[in-house]
Image 1: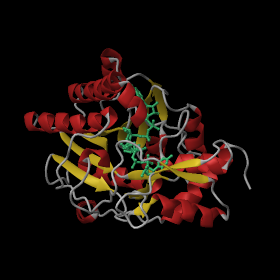
Image 2 (image 1 turned 30 degrees about the vertical axis):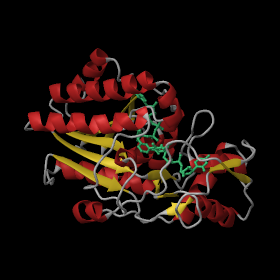
Image 3 (image 1 turned 120 degrees about the vertical axis):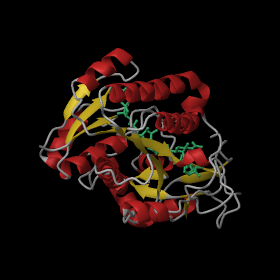
Length: 343
Ligand code: NAD
Ligand code: UD1
């Protein structure tokens, strides 16, 4: 029998890529998603890529009773990967309660349901945003966390604190928190990728939507940062590399290889690229010119963020191996297929 894994938010961007990697590793996947930021069509696309359709349950994890019922019927699952959350930074600043309600109730209901049903392994989608403005680079897991700028970011910090308390009170429960840097890219098939609702907040979807003609031009938020070209530096990571790290983390939990009951790992490449680096790489990969303009800084942006990847390499045996060019090529392939303008 293949081990069963529950994946909340499995129809979303990172979740769907992770489901593919889990299926490739012979896990049986149960997706719990309310489709608030995704589509059921993703399931057909996963089937097209892997030959298997994961079990899907349409459920809002804010509902404690229904969540518990669903976990009761899958109490043989070996682990939970929890992606379900809202993630729009700007919206979270204007509507913090929506974010605290969704991201924290979903987390609490998932945790209490899984524990009640004897499922004691948990993987959490965290973010580099928990480091705030880092005073030391590269960022190691020993860097202090700070209160993030946005309510969205703060749901990640609070969630990690909840997990810490839970683990200190429960001898049988184990968790791994994965702190993502900047996930971009899409599956090589071009069948799944990131589909932001409305105007994208993030750089990569904004670039591809501009290039495809949906947006007029990209606004580059500031070129007066203390970096090599004045634009902020980030650690962009291919979503497929990120997905693979989740499979390794699942195996680590199931086979009880953890060194402590709560472990935290950065998931990045360790390489920093500026906004202009990304634009210029996009232009060279696609052999086109991107329409962009330098404008004022965006509130909350930090000058420079990139990961130390040493701990993930040492303990998980994981490193990201896809280049910025590959990330951009796959994002572009996805955007073109999405708009049915394959060239
Ligand atoms: P996404 O929006 O594509 O996926 C999240 C999924 O969760 C969606 O399918 C959505 O429908 C579902 N969902 C949301 N609330 C739910 C609820 N109450 N009940 C059931 N399902 C619900 O986002 P993503 O980019 O795939 O991100 C996945 C996780 O990774 C999130 O927790 C996000 O905060 C975290 N993260 C993302 C990034 C990023 O850049 N994408 C960076 C750091 C951390
Ligand atoms: C953002 C969030 C972070 C969240 C992450 C993943 C903020 C302040 N931070 O990270 O909390 O975890 O997304 O969802 O929103 N840029 C432009 N023009 C654009 C878009 C972005 O110049 O239209 C620049 C930004 O100034 C930044 C870089 O591109 O320097 C990357 O931006 P983005 O993709 O939004 O990621 P982060 O800001 O790192």
